[in-house]
Image 1 (tube, rainbow, N blue to C red):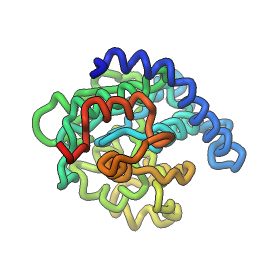
Image 2 (image 1 turned 90 degrees about the vertical axis):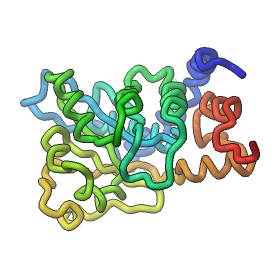
Image 3 (image 1 turned 60 degrees about the vertical axis):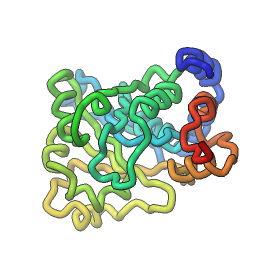
Image 4 (image 1 turned 45 degrees about the vertical axis):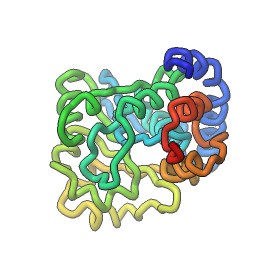
Amino acid sequence: MLPVSALFKRGKSEAGAGQLILHWVVFRLKATGMVTTHPETDSQWDNFMRLGIFGGTFDPIHYGHLILAETCRQELALDEVRFVPAGNPPHKTDGVSDGHARADMVQLAVSGYPEFTVDRREIRRSGPSFTFVTLEEIRREMENSKLFFLMGADSLKDFPTWRKPDRILQLSVVLAVNRPGHTLPEPNGIQSLAGELDTSRIRLLSMPGTDISGTDVRNRVRNGQGLRFLTPRSVEVFLTEHKLYDESL
């Protein structure tokens, strides 16, 4: 079994192919007008770091996650996108894989992309993983930053039921991005989804209809099918070496 450090080296050598995929996707987005070439600016925040926070189970991470992160990075001129694997997500009732394994796969996937980093705080934290707690911690650590929270637009309908969603909107601008099988709500339909929450702090973004999901990746592993162009090669090797999702054991 290859150690994770060896997989990191392999990931760096293979990052070029992944970068080509992401660059091609963003090129297509710009060509169709889905991503602007002049991201929005806010003079009040000109001297502040623009930090994207991307939470999720990443079970496992795949190119859909990376394309979403890159779309937001370019559209909002983010200086960094920080992937935060959830430790014990309260909205997941079917369980998730080991947190450290999921974080290792995220680290492999973002290797070679300096704007993408991994934050393991929720995995190390005991108890449920609440987004507002993570954002409060990051705000205290990075006072001179403007926070953007990345999420799938399909999660907007459940967002009012999250723990302290109003606090999340106080701490960050929510970037709601369409996901496979889901269309973006109309701008005037956000209010019906968000209820009494401040919708001026929610932005809708479009990305390519990449029909990739963690469920599909896990099922393909269980069925012995390949993962080429679904997740970075280094993540695929990690899954094979560590026999994650292999129910034949």
